[in-house]
Image (cartoon, rainbow, N blue to C red; front, side, top):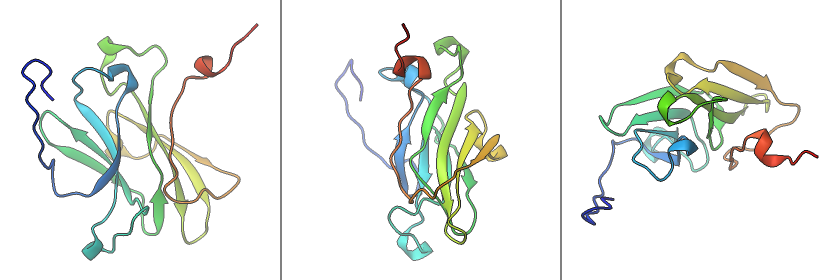
Length: 152
């Protein structure tokens, strides 16, 4: 959307099937460069709704994308962007973490995966085993702890 001219353009970014577009909330309401998505294989690739097989980061200025595959039989849920503590617009749009929950369909074990948003291709910088299975495709959101709790 061009808020000055009123022009609206629509086009495919690429031929991937992705869902749950997320970005750094510090940059909501202004032109943003990066977005993070869950990848869904196409039907002819064995795709199935709610079986998110990887994380995708788009550079919306260049159209380039980077990806991390969860592995065979491992499926994700909606990702969230968590800015680093102290991050602001001057520290960079991808100064934070992308967090998702994945479940291995072979063992039914679920993990919370934390990625450095600057380079998701490195893989998770943290992996937390969860005590219970989380079904595929759960929605998610992020809030800072200090925004959730009133002290005093």
